[in-house]
Image (cartoon, helix red, strand yellow):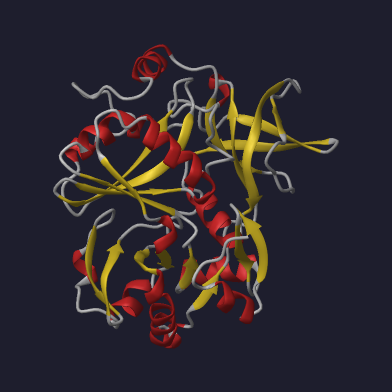
Length: 361
């Protein structure tokens, strides 16, 4: 298995380790619920160094990104990040990702860990315009410091004014004595905070500084288990569950990152434009159980007549709501907020209601 600059620390701290996307990653330390609530109420640190980072450079950089992603990167100012996806040729999604406008003619693409090889091959094979591509995934580490007390902790370690970095914006500066750290007001938890990108060799210096600075706030390391429950409470999609090579961004409710701007001829634009105009045969919805139980990926969804209308893609017991929550694809007529549906759990049908996300307000 691959490791991150922090793998030995996770093991020394007694984390429950497991393979994820080819990496030996911490799933939990003190327990998913405790870690989840730590992020909601205080501050926690996620090792997300397994994520992939691709640089796109040169005079053709924007043209390349416009042709391969669904969102409109031409409106992205310097210092801003954008959520987008790589559509494939068959109506699905290669991956969802972040695009950072780092410098004029220089962008950073941050992709999912499990898709690094696939995404890199996709980018290289679709680089017909001659943009300069660089895969720096193996040289780049990333920590996500999340929670309402994250800014206060991190501000002790940099002269950069963190309060001046709006949501989905970033800057590059010195952090904990390390130069060229990307400080990004993004995250996958809905609890606020920053994501830091830096060279592997600076990893332990930054890790130790953050945990020392966060002692008064009770800072804790957080595993991937709580990362999943936190993102689900916000209704954020997870590639491999809610998104994959067969789900279109229109079906997934990602029409807002699928822009049909003049002159933007991206992969499979015509098909997605047709879906947006004519409608789809299934839609991703969020639901909350009113019966006791936990929905899981792959469970069937039924209507009141016990007819199968869809399938659960993500599900958990919400640590904040203390009820079962999930997302799944259903026939469009059942995706409306307030609709009653039933989740098939073994030999039972558990009553649920379609709700608007985020679950955690």
